[in-house]
Amino acid sequence: MIDIVKECEGAKTIAIAGHVNPDGDCVGSVMALWQFLKKVYPGVQIDTMIEQPPAIFDFVQGVSQIVTDYTTDTVYDVMIVVDTVPDRCGEAIRYIETAKKVINIDHHISNHGGCDVDHIVPDASSAAEVVYELITQKEEYKKLIDKEMAQTIYIGIIHDSGVMQYSNTSPKTLRIVADLIGYGFDFPRLIDETFYEKTQVQSRLLGKALMDAYTLMDGRVMVSATDLATLKAYGADKKDLSGIVNQLRIIKGVDVAVYIYETDENAYKVSMRSCSDDIDVSKVSAHFGGGGHVRAAGCNLNGTYEEVVQAVKEQLALQMEDNR
Image (tube, rainbow, N blue to C red; front, side, top):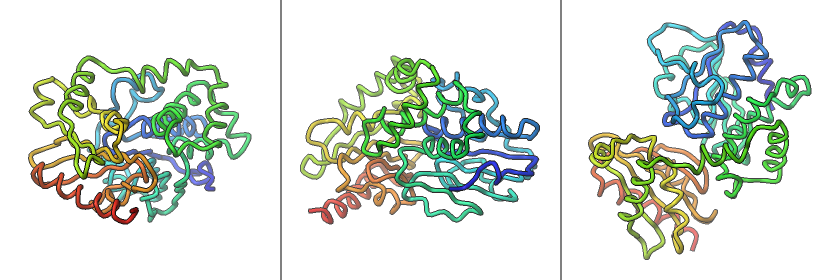
């Protein structure tokens, strides 16, 4: 295990980057690490670089200070990439490429490293769980955890573990969660407001996606999609589509859920969820340059909608054939 404090020792400028379209784990792990390092190195410039998270995370300490200006010429002494690989960090990539040291902290099995320092734990439930272990490896570090930091880590874990119901939840994950809720934050409220609660627009988009869903491959694969015209008609954006793929996954008889939304003309984001370890959607995603886990993965594809569906279908067929 790396010592993140020592890795940042002597740095005058540090930045922490996460992936595009930040989810709860990205927000939780990036912001918790920021909160921790700000306590360890109060006199150091420490920036966070992720796209503006959904409004449900506005209460997280430090979210209002996320960098939005990517035109500066800052060369960071240390750049930390969390919950992803450098190529998926959007505009932050320019600072990653010029940084004096790049540290990668992740839990995705599709992440094969390649930075100056890599700390990848594929069996962790979330990047937030990895961050927790980094900041509790020494008692002097753990003493810096407060209520705010604990709930920030907790947010990351619940979002990537499906509130501890996904197969990536281990006994260790549950022990960590038990420790975190001991700090006294209102964890039932966090679950409701950041994981389950939907706006009217989000609920309508979910309803439409479920109504429009159809099956492929003898009913084993459930597919649905949202195009740009629909987003415009509902006055919504991509942040309002979170969670739809998980609702497709729990339809009875489904082995794999595929949710596709249009990001530009002939450009689509594909999210996949598998209902068992026998169908590894991370391999499907990796084939198209994406990443993820055995049961949850995503990628971006170009082409017509029909071409995208066909391409994903062909790769899923290979997975299903291998596991007969």
